[in-house]
Image 1 (cartoon, protein in one colour):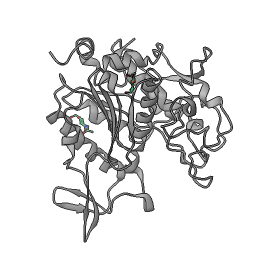
Image 2: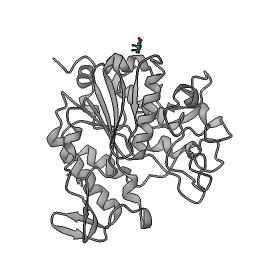
Image 3: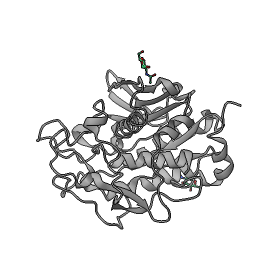
Image 4: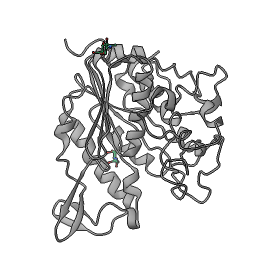
Length: 342
Ligand SMILES: *[C@@H]1O[C@H](CO)[C@@H](O)[C@H](O)[C@H]1NC(C)=O
Ligand SMILES: *[C@@H]1O[C@H](CO)[C@@H](O)[C@H](O)[C@H]1NC(C)=O
């Protein structure tokens, strides 16, 4: 049968765990833990400029002066996070398509994964096409593996109406055909829902035939995410496609900001807005969805953002995205662990 070696043990071992946050097939919870200096100096996992000049988010190249932030590894409370093994990842993904669907935080994770796989087979004749508005594809022909990113900020439909402007249709997904026939789907949406004022991406919400000017943004997020959950429940065959949700990456767009932060924080951290919605929606689904649950580990890394080293001039202070090498590499270490175990 087509679905194979790499999904079957997961299905057998962990059906009941899949709806629970960020557990490996062995039952380890990767969502709780702390950042520690990697004494073995295995981290950073790569030097972006030297190893993967094709990726972005390279803060050192953009002039970031401190390097401490590169030396940390995520240490879960109850177990070790296995080392990222790019060769194993590729062997188990031979002939597979892996697709990230989401906003620029998905892009951040996708770029990290492309580098982690590239350094495993540096002589591969890989192709890397990065498109801001459509499908970006990294492929390794020797393994017939494609790692893709499809930009989609809300997952539900955003339509443009000549008179009314931009309408965010909370109960409608018409672009789902692009998500079919993929072996692993890693969805993400959150940050675009929190935007207000100039950066808000819509003029109206729509539910059914009703246009709504104002609604609590978290309420809208819940309705939109529920629409996505229904799409997955009706369209995904878990024997063919594994579905994951990336989870909410904390941003540090606040008074303290992220400029000149050079060390991780220690927990505990307050609950992050929206997380309970993600967990509640996923736990109500009928199809298995694995939540990567990266919120705490990102809350603790105020130092992990590009800040003024995003490559867009010093007036642009980015406390939402993440330097590479850096924090998203840990998300991919968790992805590797939940897909393939130790
Ligand atoms: C990459 O392509 C070149 C030229 O076609 C070929 O000589 C080389 O063997 C290929 N590398 C790999 C790892 O397949
Ligand atoms: C999940 O289901 C429970 C029980 O039916 C319900 O109370 C809760 O509101 C649901 N969560 C969401 C996000 O719909």
